[in-house]
Length: 293
Image (tube, rainbow, N blue to C red; front, side, top):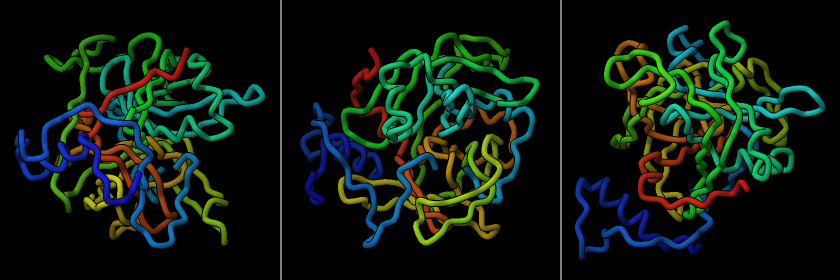
C-alpha cells in the first residue's frame, strides 16, 4: 500500500481520534480492501519480526496471573513445549495476539493445525489453565493482529458478579489519547542482550507474566496509526516473547485486571529503544478471514 493511502477502516479510526464519526466527510465505515501495512516510521528500522516480554518487569500478582486474562502461546517442538508469544482474552474462548506469531517459518504450520497451539494462563502455577487452539482468524486489513478461538472456555470472572465461570466473560476494547499511561503485560523475557544484529538476542525469564507502566504515543506508521512505547524511567519495555501481548487502561492499584479494557496489541520492537503496537480499537472495524481448516 502506498504510504499516502488510507483504508476506510483507518479513516473511521482517525475520526474516532477526533471524537466523532461524520458520514459524508470521508469517515463512514465502508467495506475495506486487503492491505499490507508499512509498520514503522523509523528511517532505519531494525524491528524484530519474531516473537517479541517486559524487560525489568514487575511480576504479576497471583490474582492477575491466574484470572487476569493474559495468556501465553506455545507449540510442541521435538516433544518440548516452546513458548513463543503472548495474548489477551476478550472472552472465555477468544483471544487477540499478533498475526506475525503465526507467520514465522517455525510456527506457520499452526495455521493449518489449530489444535497444535497450546494456550496457557498462569503457566507453571498451581492455578494453571491450558486450552488448545480451535480456529485462527487474520484481519483482512493485513494489520498485525490475529484472533484465536480455543477449545473450551477459560475460567474467568463473570462481568456481572465476578464469580469464576467458563462463560459470560467479556473484555472491553477502548482507545486512549496519545501520551496516556497504560499497563502493559507479557510473558516474555525479563532481560535481553542483543548483538550487532538486533534479531540475534539472548535473554532469561521467558514464561513469567510481568507488567510495566508505559506511555503510549500515537504515530503515523505510513499506512495507518499505531501506538509507540519507549522505556520508562525504570528502563522497562516489552521484549522478545511479548508479541501479541497487551496494554490495558491504567488503574491506581493493580487488581481485578480482567476488567481493564484492551488498548493495544504488541506488534514489533527495536530492542531497548521502542516498541510499536496496533491500536486495539481497530479490530472492531475490521473484517476477518478464518485461516485454519
